[in-house]
Length: 480
Image 1 (tube, one colour):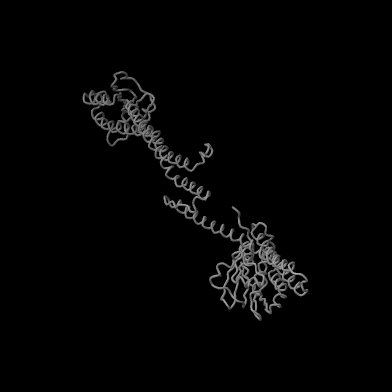
Image 2 (cartoon, helix red, strand yellow):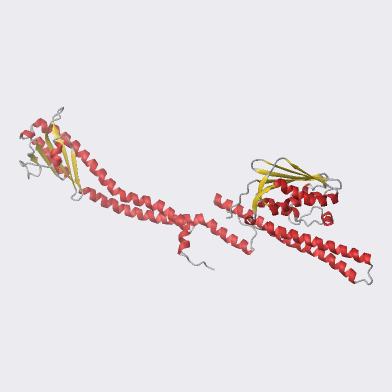
């Protein structure tokens, strides 16, 4: 089904943003250049013409002074040079003496008249001035006339130049710039579309493959190595899918195990009950024996259900923890006191070694269940006359609990699986002592909920040791 166009999604699209970014990078510099070029060209042209007129004025300066031109002495050479320069400038040149009288005007309009203009007056103070009128397209430069080695200004050379060529050139450059910009804009637009498609194509393919995986058509995402990032995402997604596959298999196995574990005691009870019902005049001794067996199966069923309920509680988010400061020394002493009858029945010695007073922030109920399971396993899977050693220690950051026993131990190949639900090393022996395969899974879950770690070391036939490390101060993990 084709997705309906949404304007908000369009502007939030990664493809759109890449295209806009490329457009900005290509278009903005070009536009800024075109806009600023006119101003820069005009300014540079005026400065160049001012310098050129000043140089030419300085050349005329020597001839004007040496010929006595300012003193009304005629000089055909100076007149010709002024006329030639005036023609080349398409403008007007005037020579002003120190009385502000116009000695020479190439337009022959104002000779003999007095000129009172701020720029001319400033030039008599030994300053070169310039005035550019962009509206009327002319430039006026005034240059002081003075003798060599003398700072006294004898007169002023006023040079007027037509600047219409600037507008002509600007019109040409602007027309050319518009054409070039249009071509550049088209190239940038094509490049923006190509770039945005190129960068986003792997993500669209990735979405299609995920959709196929979701529908069950594929079990693995193809690794897109177009870019480093897409390759990493593909690999992470494959890792996630593998993990989910394992979780799904574990879930199915868990459901199967739960069904089997719950069904087995019920089957046994039904067989026992049918045996009693199928016999007439059942002896009291046999009746009592069967009823004791039925009671044991009921107790086993109750144990399984209780462990399942505990497991469900452990699966809830850490926000359900009831955290409070707990004296760990007193807590472990209380746990061992409750388990003492079981230990005495098994003829197993339980010893507690506390190195210092320890207080930790924990959920007392859940953590009590974890430690109880560890110690109870140490007792149940022990040999007669064996021992279980529990030690408690801490540093400035962590609490350390060690549960060590002299029991049957765990085979090396089973160490990586003992925290899995319903996993049992020796199923026959577990059934004899009433094990459900959930105890260590509960321990692992409880320790993890408290942001702790648990490690196991075991030698088959010699015993097992569990090391629990727990933060003294509980910090809830952020949920994202």
